[in-house]
Image (cartoon, rainbow over all chains, first blue to last red; front, side, top):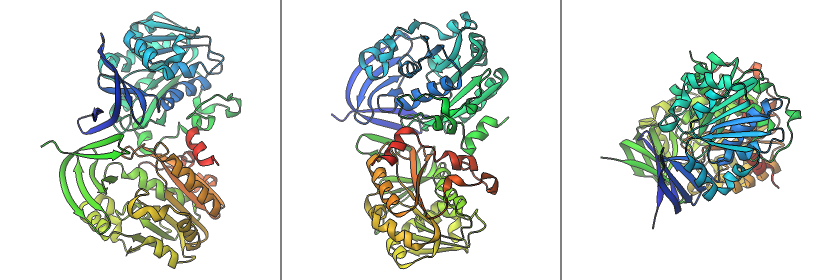
Length: 277
Length: 277
């Protein structure tokens, strides 16, 4: 049988991966969920038809959403992840010895369960003693916790479906309160090849709240547009002013201290999107 | 009618673009050629089923294959392009006032003809007075011209079909002879997500010949793997030692003097591919 998983982007582009095996398909309280084994990218997690993560290229996204803020902060001890139920971000956070507490606020219990069962290469950190898994509304959690975290990572799906509320100025303001005095937020903010307008809008929101707002990029081959942005809001530390000599050696496949700095150098059209008034 | 162009990668991945109109399909002496108008990426050129260039994202590839070597060289006056019949590289080279002569060695006359007819946004430089179009074998042309060019750009298709001979040590040695004493070669060397082994092999060849061999990267959303490499071989100038203050302002959408430097900072797994013995 010739089986393919196909993702549609804006009805103009289709990205398809050859399927070896469908491991699970279910309808959760929040979304359609599937775990599929593909020939090229290993096992993949799909939510509402959108590819979220693959075994073979997840390292790019998870290393870059984690190590850039954690090595920008001088001594990160507590991290909150909003979304990220696959556990990929946690796997990377656990490489930082300073971190004592990781809270995962994931709205969909089934994402965590499926990740634990089918994506163990990605999810193994979920069982670590430092991790508290809070199944519920991340926005509510953030609202109820003030001055508590060094880092907040918004590891969300696209700005449709359950994640819509994570792309609003009210949420980013609430995260500001949830962070300590030298805290840092990083959010995944989509591809400039697809979501230019959204990125520009989000950038303006961050700049209204955080004294240091800086976007950075990486390359994720299985995501639409591939060129991916993160937006960092920081109360105190400038991510470009790190001393690369002070960064301890950790096991990575994408991140290096040099990549940390290079990631903030944007192609001209991306720079224009972020700077445009 | 619901019409799609689909590119197959290694029988594992399909990348499809919605088609508005098929402008031309023909069998040339060397390859199957098509020009198609897509909804998302404008007009595209397809050779042997492989997408070569699109109106909407060609700027990334052409700016990076041209401006990096030309701004590394102190005074580029003569440039040879092997392949590149679409004219995209020429369009960018013409932004450098120092350049007096551009030779295009394209094996397939039909590529040039179709680009002139259907891809005028990309090809308009082909008619410039500084340009000599040489229809024929680029390898033969290089062999017959010694100590003549400041820059040689290998703007080839994938290492299958007519371009196979452009991925060999004999060819790179021949280019060395074709270059002046301070000359520079740049070749497109595919994606590390797909062609890791090839990239490692090519890097070794370059290092045997050129005193300065350096790979650099950019992001092309319509190419398989999206993370794209170029390999530079230079007789004298180090592309990372440029003085960014000396780079004149030119009209670009991807390249900036800062991107020039950042492009040489490789993600760890890409660095490993190039440095692996």
